[in-house]
Length: 231
Image (cartoon, rainbow, N blue to C red; front, side):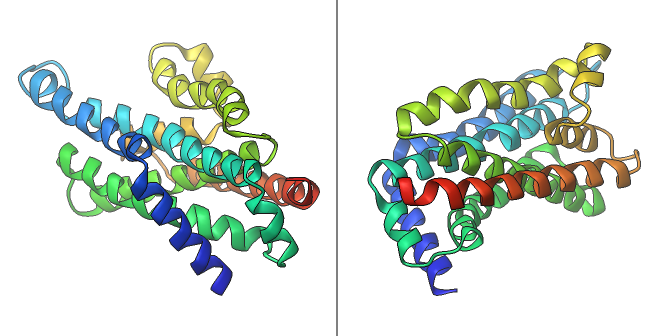
């Protein structure tokens, strides 16, 4: 676990030095808070938590993916990944180190979203855990995109259309049944459903999210073994 700890600490230091990256974790809850206080609460015809759930689902599908995508692409660009692979760092160790730090921050942001939304008790716990699961799926997907990108510019070009689809399709599905049916297998769609309706059965959505994570993890491992030494 030394490798995991070292990568975790390295990523923490790199993130704290980068204000642009930190802003990605701040902007969504800030917008959700403003929209909740200015628009949702004064209005009688919409729920107070509507903007919280909307931006929380978008956050889970976008921010962790963008962050780890850029981090891995940077490691490939600077040849750091090649040395890690040569040193015997396993795919799961690398992913745990980088992804672990991202998930820690995502967990804190998820708690903030829950507080802004005014959730309490079981609903609060469920809300936070669902966002963490969604963020975990985004971490694994972002890691795979980063692995196939030669540099940060390529990572951004490849990742942008993907996270746009993942982040915005759940929101659009609220107004269009066709989009909802097309995106049903996406983990972001299941996250959106769960945080917007605590009364639905969680079994199927959780299974779909976990299946997404499992498939994406296998893809990452395969890419890591193939691309790692070519960094």
